[in-house]
Length: 267
Image (cartoon, rainbow, N blue to C red; front, side, top):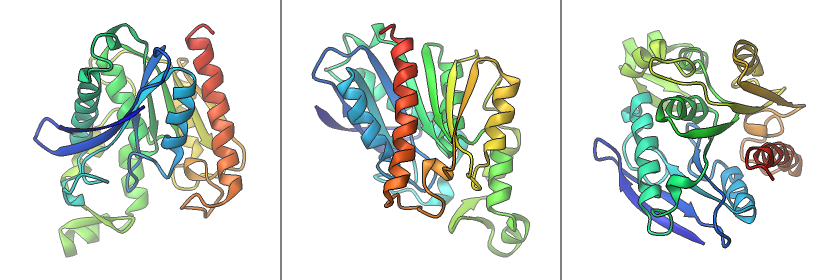
């Protein structure tokens, strides 16, 4: 069963998400975090995963963070720490729902983040304290590298427009300072959370080299390349996920996630 939940972030930002409760008693609970310029459905990928997980008795919550989907804040209000607050608020909103409030504390907590939301949800998971495992799709781990790659003219943008052109959206200058010093893995007060990364080998938006470097440096992070897939598991150029081959890539990643989940839950 699905429920729409309205909730507020720490600073009062109005947010909304979709809570999925399986018909059978849940064996685990997963929090989804989408990528930048996307929404809670992540081009349909998260909706598909949520339904598949529900069939496996795993509840989930997917939501629109600030400046996306339901939230009406302008894109210039986007910040890394704002999204972290939104993630925390989403978890609290889901855990207070009557269908979960009495049981969620005993369930294994999982997270799944895509692209720009991947590194952020991993940072949240590593400081939350109770996350069993993270599943990441083409995650951004280095936000400075991502922003300066996507907005190579950021210096002149700031001089001429006082904002940064990031893939056709305008970011405020303050996000540069966050990105420069933001740590996704190994931040102060964090603990290592086991993670599984699915990343396309043909990704030229967030290159797989970023995930390879993180997996090489951290034994608790596993990388599963998806051969031939571009960013967020699509066929190169299929930004709207309309080609069947893109969904075959998604299916391959889903099978990998379900196999790992089965091991985590001891099935």
